[in-house]
Length: 329
Image (cartoon, rainbow, N blue to C red; front, top):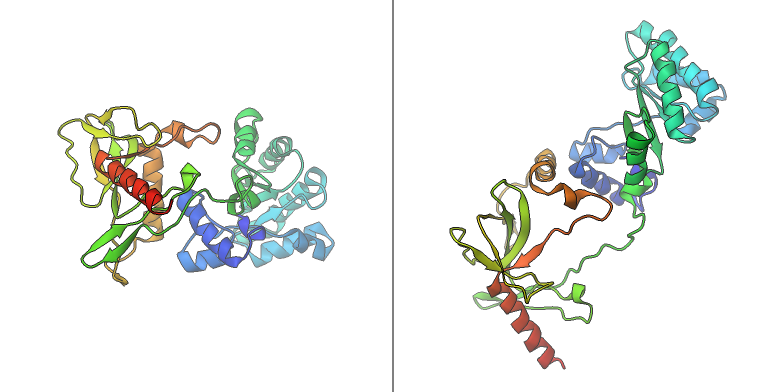
């Protein structure tokens, strides 16, 4: 994660780094996120560092002397092939090796990344630096990364993703609705619903349980909304309603159900400790690796992850929707 440079403020950079780490990135260049959440910190030098010294070799030398255990040199300030890489190789041999250290990597920000990475890989190998990694930081998105690696044969070991990870690229507004679901009345919660002409803005009312439905192989078939406390019987086919196609008669067969809802705060007090960040990250990784279908994870034309409802919950929603429309004309 290299997103701090484009984030809307430091909170966005810090918590964006946390979200990116949960989602699978291996580290962050945002030091505040590393300090707050224990995320591994990784980064390189700035163009301004190189330009300050005037002489590229001198800039690389000072950086290596300052950060001998984490030297990754930015080689495209002037000319990658004729200046940046030769100076990086020189620093590796003349500065780091006498200290018993090695050049961890070089970074390229611009130009034909596939072509340059292949040329650079050959130059580093010929200089006796096969372990030196090639890092790329650019205005990259998932399609660019995939194309570089699978179609163009780029020799890139890691990517620093900036503006298209922490800030929005094509979806500046998050498609979700956060409204009141229920109101405490005496000894129970009375459901409330938000009504709209836009179907996606009609909320799911009341207290509810959310189950993940698994097939015999442990893959997630769908998520299922049920009334809070509603008991599900997985010993026989369980009828459900697809809210987008409620007229169809459908059932889950040979499936198991896991309630995803867990209470952490009750009446303003924490009921149990929150999971550590690495536990959250591992939980997400396990879901993506073993539970969620690959077809749902593809960036282009992904399959929809179904969100279904039990008949009792769907009836509750429809009844409340009808009553609310009648009451408010």
